[in-house]
Length: 128
Image (tube, rainbow, N blue to C red; front, top):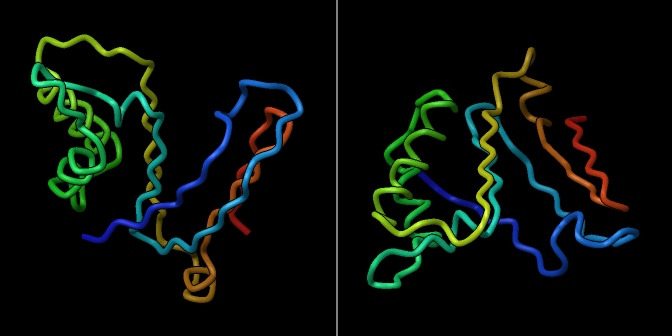
């Protein structure tokens, strides 16, 4: 399993009106997972004050190859909660996982991609 990260810096989406955001693109193929999360997922800590971080997220995801997205979400959240133990979350948490399904034709499969553009507190997603 390989992980690719689309990283950006700047303001959180929706904090300030009329904000502009970086635009990132990536190509996704059938069978790929697109995973979006808030910092609350990554900044989960345990009794030792260790952060779950990318290592924890990628470790949880690596056990979920081929599973339906609802099971992947449940497995990731369970692993994150087990890591935290009795420590309550200090931030809100959002986890979105989208499975890129088989395209109708091989031509579409070769061109399948997702782009996201964020401007003025609105988000537009499209798969041309």
